[in-house]
Length: 126
Image (tube, rainbow, N blue to C red; front, side):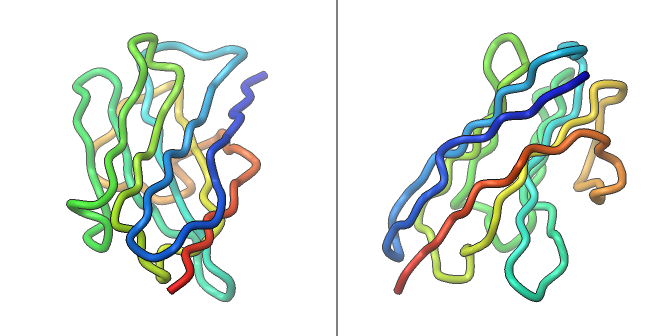
């Protein structure tokens, strides 16, 4: 069993910052691909950022480049999303996702990730 537990969501004003965390436990290994997705009401789930543990390569959707940073701890089992200069359009439920059988490149779609966190709400007010 694999569990992903997220924390760090909340409400901020436009221009503010939040840091999301996602801790993995269970049958996991350090060779993995971990990601953050988000889903706003009435919209499809969108890949926001991805990190490949074997290379520390990171990938971002264009709308967050320069504002969000994805990173992992040294054990490669916790992933973070530092979100700066937040905008109202960043409002969504943010989900952590992981694949512990493969590395990754680019922004894989949701079907590439068998494990998901419960989601954490991020609300940005103008």
